Image (cartoon, rainbow, N blue to C red; front, side):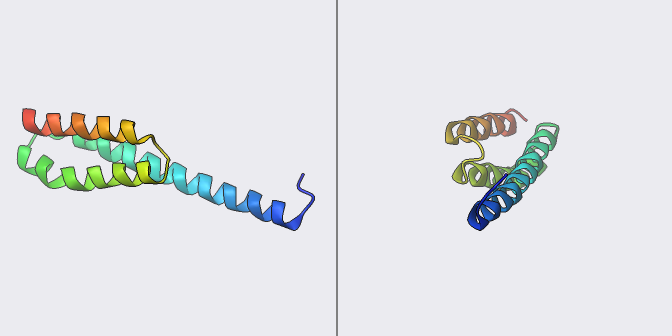
Length: 83
């Protein structure tokens, strides 16, 4: 257990950040899953920028690797173009 007040605070902060990161990552994964299920090109073109923005934010915060975000965005763009 923590012996200092600062260590206890750090534990609280780390837990809050972990939960926030988990929530944001899960929300983004669900958005990607819903995006891949789309069959209408117009709807996909509307949603593409918001999904890419979510992926960029995850990469910026180091929740996912920047190359993984780039790969996902590339595959989603290919999905839009294939519709």
